[in-house]
Amino acid sequence: MFHEDYEEFTESQHKTLEKYVTNTRSHIFVLRNLPEVIKGALFSRYSRSTLGLRSLLLKEFISNAEESGFGDIAGAGADLQAAAQQTKAIQKAQTFYDRILDGYGDDSIGELGGAHVAIENVSMLAAKIIEDARIGGSPLEKSTRYIYFDQKVHGEYLFYREPVLMTSAYRELYVDICNMLFETYSKLIPPLTTLIETKMPQDPNTSKVAYTAALRAKVLDCLRGLLPAGTLTNMGVFGNGRFFEQLIHKLHVNNLAEAQEIGKRLHEELTKVIPSFIRRSDVAHHTHKGFTEFFETMRSDLRLETQRNLEHVPKSTGEGVRLANSDPEAVTKVAAGLLFQYGDRSLQDLWNYCKTLPEEDIARILDAGCNARENRRHKSPRALEQANFTFEIVADFGAFRDLHRHRMLTQERQLLSCDYGFKIPPEIVGTDMEQPYLDAMHRAKEAYDVIAKELPEEAQYLVPMAYNIRWYYHVNLRALQWLCELRTSPAGHPNYRHIAQEMAKQVCQKFPAFERFFKYVDYEGYDLGRMDQEQRKVEKQMKATAS
Image (cartoon, rainbow, N blue to C red; front, side, top):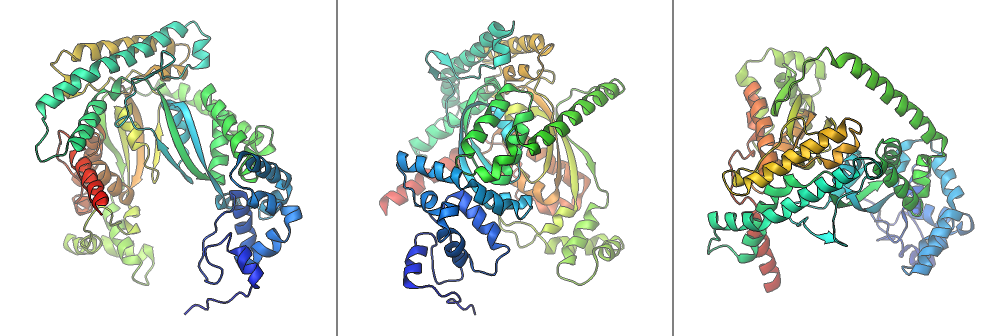
């Protein structure tokens, strides 16, 4: 039993603390009404103090307001004048917080504070660069299946005017092709909506709201391939200080001007909220200068080695999913891992033992690790992480964008190009919409080929999402199980559903014993995949309204 009243505070202190913690007496409480810089500094100091967190807050922050700036920082309200006062106070007290954070010398301290950031009107290509920073951040991006991208602002379609392209001889070509892609996208929405509505009419038992939403998602899923990678999107990102510091480092050294500009703006805005956590990513800071030197030297060396070696490697262009590598002892390693947690033997001894077991005994161990699962949200034991697989995938950029969000794996991609063909939605094949779609794809490739000879990285902005990109996944069985079961659900886009289905199939073909771990993979196809989900959403709203 916990002793709740293990810290003693005066009534005045209780009243003060009530503003900043959810409970002044319990051993469990949540911080509130505190800026990130104070929470981060407080937790880092807490890790090496004999005081409880509330006592520490009172003694070293609230009572030490002259140095910590606590009153001005934490006490400011929400109006503009107060916000300006808070920013000024944070900057004034930054030396105090820097000293605390520097005093612990551990990069993990940067994980003790964070911020919510809106990143608007950036290209889909830039969004992927931001989302490449996988650990410590949680991004959300504007959807291409719920929102029409045919709108204009001041008479112009919303795509990124890349500064290098816009000051080059390719300016007119780039703008014309992007406009053409958006115009084709816009023109095909009405006829495709009519076609799908005719082929898949509304069921009388389905609500009009759910049907309309599912129909829109189906149409936009089909046509998103026309959107160029330069299409503007919005993002919301929550991340800790360590995440943002590393992200800004990487954005600063990226070759694309857009990425560099985003890195600069991120640093400027985060300095107003969590300056102590991201100060080392300033371009003038010695840490960033060291990172730049390392990264640019490594990039240059690797490019030289790549050019020297590629002439000896044949080039393949076929699309699809291929299980490129796996561990032949994966099954026995997973079995040993399942036994490890509940026993007292070494992992090596369990590996050796499981190698001697007949298939039926291995099957019993594996079954014990999965028989109780009743849905995909029941996470499997970590023992499944003993098995690793490497997949090489050539598929459309649209599918990559969706699958790219999985962070518990290693992934790497090549530059966007028009070299590996493109996807054409089966719904428009054989219709009057097919030729305009094909014409748009071919014109985009012709323009890309011209620009890429001189500006291969900037030319990526022109590439439509239907064109294929090559990437690889290195993923363990546990993460693969989650990915495949989630991404084959009926509501998913058919292109990435196919990729997830293929990964599960190929693992099960090579390791039949692992098929039991993929029991919630859905191998079916669906016409209006969003229908059931949209209908359930409508029913929930109706119940909520009725209650």
